[in-house]
Image (cartoon, rainbow, N blue to C red; front, top):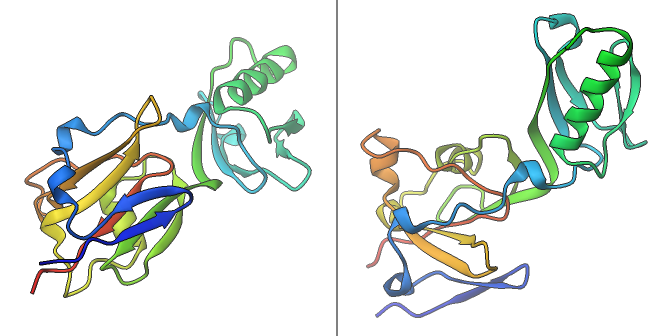
Length: 199
């Protein structure tokens, strides 16, 4: 019988081996936190797209000053703002002097403060920076893939729900990898655990 092990991670208890009896099906995974509502931080990389203006579009890193430098309008405060607030400010700045009804879209490329944890039987377990539109396949690839000892068909994903409760679901990773089931979009704070194949 497998021994029940509890991994204390950032103040939350994640049940790893032997805890699948409390796991829910994947379709009960809560939506989780919306990264667009999180405050941006120094070092974050965002993609600024100005409609029909390729010279004004592209990736930008938030500098140590908390700003990012954009074409024409110069330094724009970014750290501490949400993506939505930053998008509004940039669009207003361009439309004030340089564009007429310009449309600006800003998306997160990589965060320095938001993380996803990949643990257990993977090549490089640990925390990884959350990236925009990050998926389970992407997260496992960042961790170097599963090991030969892994029981990837019983992968566990833990996510905090809207009320702060932690929900554990089982994931059939081989089915996702083979395209038989849809990939799972990650959210900041997600914990992926790949168990060892029972002996």
